[in-house]
Image (tube, rainbow, N blue to C red; front, side, top):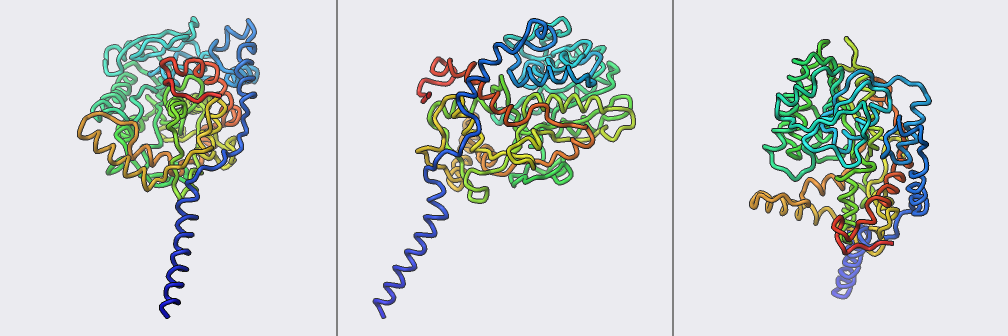
Length: 451
C-alpha cells in the first residue's frame, strides 16, 4: 500500500510537473522567430528607392522628406483629383510626428495656407514651402495662440503632452487646459471647424480591447483612469465635443499605436531597447504568450483620417461632436483589423538590422512583470522620478488592443491610404537609413548587436 501510495504520489507529481512545464514554462522558453514578411534586402531597397523616386517637378507639390510609401501615396492622391481640405489651416503641435506630416499633407492636397504652431522650433529638415508658416509659441499662452489661429478656416489640434513619464499637473496644463484655450481662441477668431486629436486610452480600464467599436468602449469621463495622460486627454476631448455647434463644428479622432518615419516615441524606444540587447517579449497566457492582437496606424493614414473629419464637418452633419477611431484597418495582416504585436515588432527590429527578440531569449511573463512594474510605480511615487517600466506599460504590451473602425469607414468615408505591410516595411527602411548609422554614437547606445 505504501509503495502504491508512493507510486501514485510520483505519478501525480509527474503530472503536475508536466502541467506546469507545458502551461507555464515551455511557452516562455526561447522560440524561433516568426517568419517575417519583410526582408532586410527589401527594406534596404525601399530606403534606396526613396532617394530616386522624386522628380524635379514633384518637389514643388510633395514634401522633400517623404519616404517611398509616403511619396507613392501622395502622387496617387494628387492624380486622383479627390477633394482635399482647402482654405487656411492651423495645426497645433506642428513640429511633432503627426503634426509635421499633417502640415505637409495639407499642402500636398491643396490647402491655401498652413500655419504650424508649436512650442518647439520647426523640425530639422522642415518643408520650406511658401504656403507654410512656422510659428513658435506656447499653447498655454492665449495671446500667442489667438494670434496664430486668426483667420483660420480649420484648426487641427494635435499638440499634446504624450507618453507616461510626466507629472499630472503637466498633463492637465497642456492636454486639458490647453485644449480649453484652443476652443476659446477658435470661438473668438470665428473659426468654423475644429478637429481634435484624441486617444482610445481615454477608454481603457486595463482589460482587453478585442475588436471593439466606439460604442463598445467605456464612456468618459471615467471614475478612474489607467494613466494620467489618458485622464487629461479625456477631459480635453469632452470639452471639444461639448463645444460643437453650427458656429464651431468639432470632432475628435483617435489613432491607435501611431508609427512611421520620424517617429521618436513608439518605434524608436523599442528599437533602442532592442539595440541594447535588453528588449524581451512580455508574455501573457491569456493573449497567447506574446500574440496579443493590436491595431496600428501609419502616420499618413491618421492624417488622412483627420482631414476626412474636417471635410465631413458640415452644419447639421452627424459627424459633429462625435468620437472616431482610425487605424490601418483591413490592410493589417488580419483583415479584421489587427497584427500580432510582438511578432510585428520583431519584424521591425530584424529588418532594421538588429537581432531578433525571439531567438535565444526567454519571454518575460506578466505574472512577474506586473509586480515589477508596480514596484517601479512605487519608486516613481517616492522619488518623483518617472521610470520607463511601469505597470501601465506592461499591461499595454500584453493585452489585446484592436478596434473595429466601421464607424469611421461609413461616416468619414475613411480608408487607409497606405496599407499596413507597405507602411511597416517603409518605416523599417527609414530607420535603417536614418537611425541605424547613428547607433553607438549617442543615439541608441554602444552595446548594440547589428547585422
